[in-house]
Image 1 (cartoon, rainbow, N blue to C red):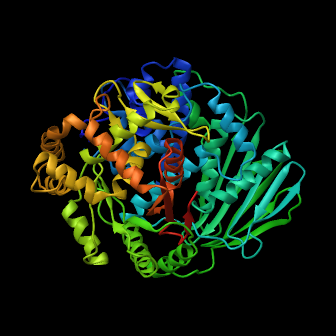
Image 2: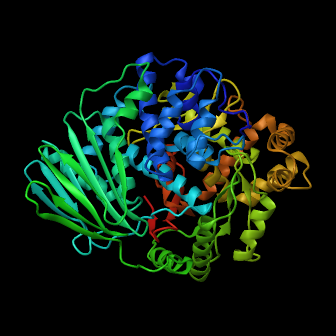
Image 3: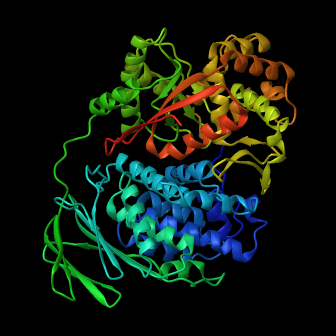
Length: 618
């Protein structure tokens, strides 16, 4: 579990920011060359700029200016960056940053990247991507970080434009070296991209269309700016997005030129000079955005309506209005959509279900309400069509966050929705799951996969079939911390026979209170976070004989092997999770396949803001 001092080694601005907001921890960056470190910081600063823009068009520049003015020892750059992401200002409150915790946690799951890992894997991934119809992982990850940050701000009452699901694809037109696109009927956005290569323009058009399932048009335009620089495209690009929404009219534009590498001592200034221009227009205001030899004028005709005019021909390029009223997204409607999707599921009975997943650093919000409502509808469906309904196995993340929400409160919330349904409430710090991890790690080491492990900064990784990596352990030679994808694989093993694992621990250690129940009780106390961690650590020490990856316990190994034998030919589990877990769940499926485990993971993903509901089974 993390402490209030975690990510605060205070080495250098670049290394501290990377450790606090990315998957590159201090142990990793200690071995990086100055040029490599500069490239990693450049990528991170662009992402932070995109996230900071949720607070307003001026905030990204303010963030970078503040970071550029940090003197060694005067202010912690992590606290400063976290303050801008939390509140849009540089006022440091001294309180824990919920958004910082979310960003580093998600980055370690899905944004490991290829830096410092095996050569050749990246080439494999790029070859696969050329024939793929999905978003590049890096771009999808950035969209997930935007979703998480926007959700946290919305929970606090911030009024922000939200994405909405468009029924029809955009209409696209090429004029010379410019491609324009907008929805065919009652357009609410208009895009223009100028580039000498038509194939690259179409790639931007496709990626924008895919991003609009998760982001607003302006958010997508900013994500594409960060991604263009990350790819180091070989040719120049001019990009313009105009968006009309219930909050007003916004234009976002940026220019990319190849071959512009920063000096290693001027990364912040380099990114600041390349920031997109974001302009919010009120009624009657206009702005002109150059695009090569031409330009476009954007005029706000009303509070949420705009006209785009081609300055060369003086012709109207687009007339935009805010999206039509689509009605409030309801839990009930999403639950019915999920029920319909799962009604078409063909496969083995689903033996367990997680719904309403929570990170204990925050209060219950719309995501838990929606997840639980969907879970209840699916439980009713499965109870009617299976020999027995799935067992509830909700998991609370107490391991990567500063705990604020009491597990007792979370349990009461679930019981209000699911009543007296059988339930195993699991802490992510659980020594039961850690013991299963050790057994699975032994299985990995004894297989041909044991020769494929990769190390970076003391952390152990495993390449996955799609060219990405999953982190098996952080600090493998010290006090190992299980990577989230590997943890999820062990969790699914536990969920295959939870009562059996619980009983084994009770009998082996003479417990009168279950491991998870005792952990939840400690975490529900009113002592400060670090005191909770100390008390929980003291309780977990009694299980140290079975949670060391370097010393597998033969009895646990035999138990895991027998549970998996009993699970054959296949045992299926159901997760109901937000759609910013899509990449994570895909990597869990890849790891299950690599390990040859007889486990199948079915996931219903949802987005409480847009009403999007999808079912993923492969």
